[in-house]
Length: 202
Image 1 (tube, rainbow, N blue to C red):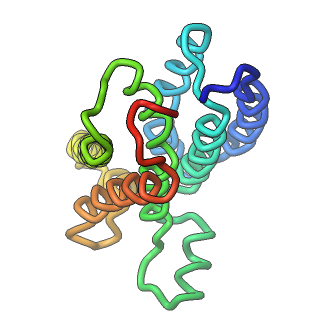
Image 2 (image 1 turned 180 degrees about the horizontal axis):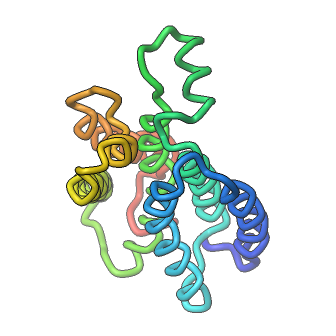
């Protein structure tokens, strides 16, 4: 159920401070700009629709956490986030998996806000249909982002360092497919663990 007193303004204030701090001297300024474009669009949507539609406080917390993860990735680029290198050393991985974490987090953290919007306009026939539609929606969104990365790489193909860094594939030819799968898995896992087995309720 949507809470009457929204936590959104406080979270926006905290995130704004965090964002400004990480806007200082990012590793690659051009990639930082590209990574933040989608973030700006999403925040603009949240701000302009706030009076008409408020998410639950749980959704705002989840959005806040994802924005923090995304902002860190934009500052360092996903392939060079220090936490990812620390995890690689700890588990003896061959690559920085911070990008994998964020793709999974996108599905896991953002599925509830999407559900809250969709149930205002759609009525799912049953719980299985609800899960199917939501999970495949996130697989589609994940695939769309990979297409945007591809377009960016084509535009900057003459600047190989810029395009390769933005793609963040780190030599994995199946990077895009794995990222899309993780978005869907994250969404499915959230619904499996936290979503009540009833439709059209938040």
